[in-house]
Structure formats: structure tokens, C-alpha cells
Length: 63
Image (tube, rainbow, N blue to C red; front, side):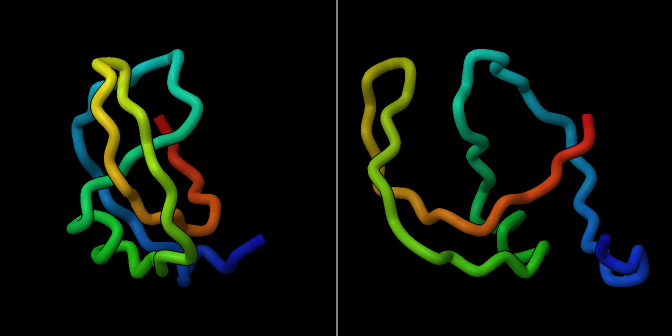
């Protein structure tokens, strides 16, 4: 529904984890796309490591 002239694009190679519930983006990608951090949450990675991460609005990712 967004005017294609307003789309922000970032192209990259990535590793896909089909069992993931959410997508983690590096801070520089979030900045490039102009995403705003709306809240914080603790993320738990498959190896058991935990980290506080910022959450944004939903983002459409094309694979």
C-alpha cells in the first residue's frame, strides 16, 4: 500500500533459520532503513545466549 517511491531498500546476503520466530537485523541495517526502535526485549539465541534487543514495527523482507 506504500508508494514504491517511499520504499527503503537494503540488499544483503544472509543466513536463513527457518525455525526462527523473529528476524534480527544489525544496527547499521536498521539505521540505513530508517527504522525506529519502539521497545526493548530480551532475545534468547539457539546457543542459550541472551541479549537485550530493540524492536521495530513490522518489516517486509523479500527472499
